[in-house]
Length: 169
Image (tube, rainbow, N blue to C red):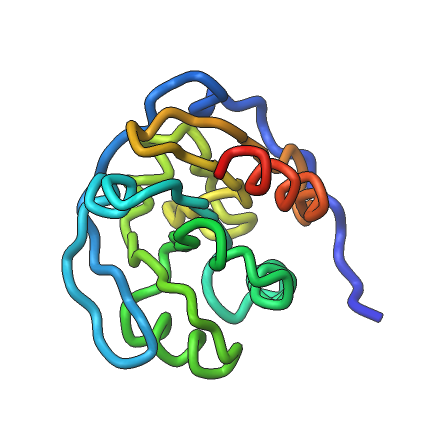
């Protein structure tokens, strides 16, 4: 059994349902390569499930992506992730997890700050990452569903996420 403390995260003023999600451009990584892509390019094509996760290799990231991969939500929306991991690490993580989803690389955690979900890693002064969060965005980047962790580790209700996707496509 993994031994860890549950940590309560500070209150956050994150992007919420009905608000327009900030646009950004970052390297978007798949299993073979990456290129700079704007979030708005993805939403122009249809709804997007934007999943913020801890750095690749952390057990919450592995758990979240295994669950999302197994639910095959990408049949209904474009599913993409975002974390502070670099493109090389994302490429390796995608291969290890056998994921068809792409991941934005945001080493500075600037995107997480824009979404109001960044936090300092416990015991790592100056290192920030996104807290786990999921945003379902429509074609105008309007948030249709939002879940943001209030403690670490915390995981979304995946049935609720799946229901949100089904009702918004």
